[in-house]
Image (tube, rainbow, N blue to C red; front, side, top):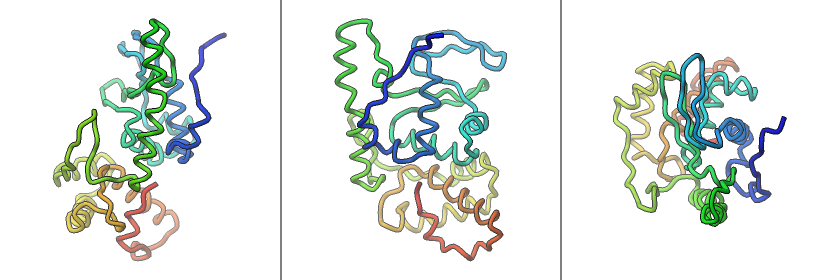
Length: 229
């Protein structure tokens, strides 16, 4: 049965998504799930309205389908959000992912003008991601919607709430907050950490690997937690 297709340009090899295999798996899975037109659908017994370019997912089932752990899946999603490829919204029916430039992958042929807009946006992901690469994935400013927004460090309450969502202790949250408050929210290379949630997930991933390898926390220096995947 014909189910349509989406475009994958060869230039994707230059993109950060392609260079991160686990992120690429999640990217393609969500892209395949995304609806090509506004429609009503049933998710887990609930009626859900999806707009063009949206997909519903659960972190656990998404990871299991692609052979990734929950943490690997969370990291991949945070990277896609950091690179402004998609946004997410949590609902009681599941998490809704919305692609920022869906027409780049699924051409909308309703009008000639839309086709022209499609061709104009084809270059956008690559240029955005190359700019990110040139700044070591972190800048002191976030560029959004053509304007600049100054980096605002998270509050401890925000850090604590996110840590609890990931089943971490208050002590863990306090340690994370202390380290990056002292460093002015910069990594060991001096780059601004704009996506602190991604950084915390990396901490958690390293701690998990430490436990599996039965190594003591002293095996790693604090600076090792600056590693970003």
